Amino acid sequence: MPVPVEISSYILLFFTTAFLGWLMEVVCKLIQFRRFVNRGFLLGPVCPIYGFGSVLVTLLLERHAEDPWAVFILAMVLCGTLEYLTSYLMEKLFHARWWDYSTRRFNLNGRVCANTLIPFGLLGLFLVYVAKPFFFGLYGQLNGTVRDVLCYGLLALFAADTAVSANVMGKIRSTASNVRGDSTEAITRAVHAALAKDSPLARRLLHAYPHARLANTRLLQRLKADREALRRAANEKREQFRAELAEKEAEVRRETERRRQELRARRHGNKHQE
Image (cartoon, rainbow, N blue to C red; front, side):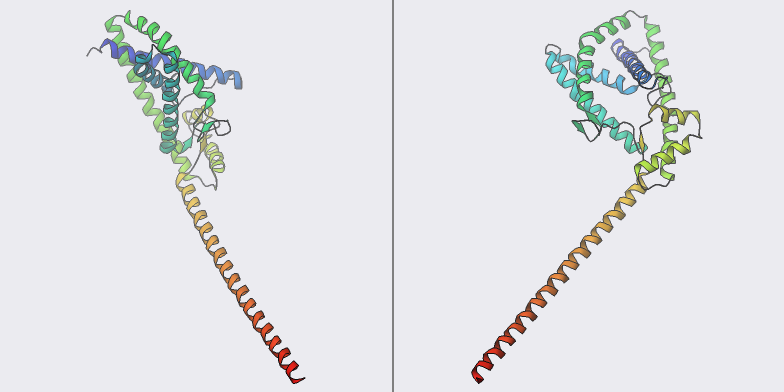
């Protein structure tokens, strides 16, 4: 079935920008580590978050194209929200924090920070005013059959890659759920050690995100609950001790006052006898 031109253009834009985002990540890591690192969760050369971000920006912000400031600010909000939700969902699904900006200033729960929001705004301007007109012009020159084959072929590869990668990430989650440790750092070290002997696919994902923090969520939740119970018990004991201490102090004060009064009474009696 032929794909409508508008839809096929957005599909191709998704894969184009997902590849360019992957390429940018690889180059950055090449400069940082001086070695090739296949970034992203998928095996193929794509980072879907860039593709989804570019499609959302071009779809939702084109109506504001007459106001560059609006495009810039809305792109920051839109892409920042997408990054935050992606981080949150990935953590809930696979028990791992794949990136963490907690050490950077002006961050929100370590999921987004000002250092990434400003580039998002600039990329939004680039997408709306440069990338979309340029790429849509290229896609429009493609033969209809070629465009359809590209769309269906890329979607099929993407679906297969997603299935395989989700299976690998499920293995990482299973490993994290079975290892023992009393902290996120201890569990992360144990998971890395266990998966270092596993399949190349699992090792690839850990190499792609060497600073990912993995956690046995159930274990940590149980430990957190136990610590909270201990904290409550300690607070109750502390309050009970304080109450008992206050009662003892009041009893000592009463006894002291009673003896003082007895002593005064005796002195008063001795004076009368004299």
